[in-house]
Image 1 (cartoon, one colour):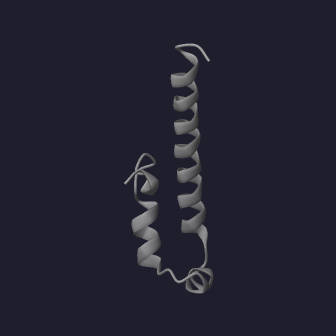
Image 2 (tube, one colour):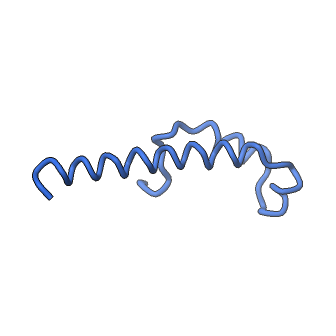
Image 3 (cartoon, one colour):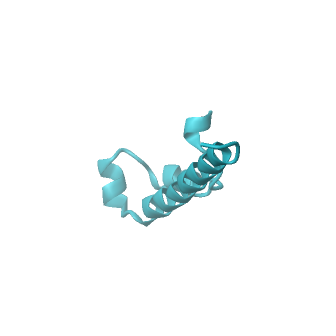
Length: 61
């Protein structure tokens, strides 16, 4: 890759990651209370997680 290719590739990967985080959080918020109980989460847990901004990536901590 050239000088521009690698940074562009990383930026594209980051954008994809943010989009996936946003989708995952939205899907989590749509789960029923029964489903949440099955996976050990409360509605409060989900509200907290789904209110996080898309760029707040738990893997980057």
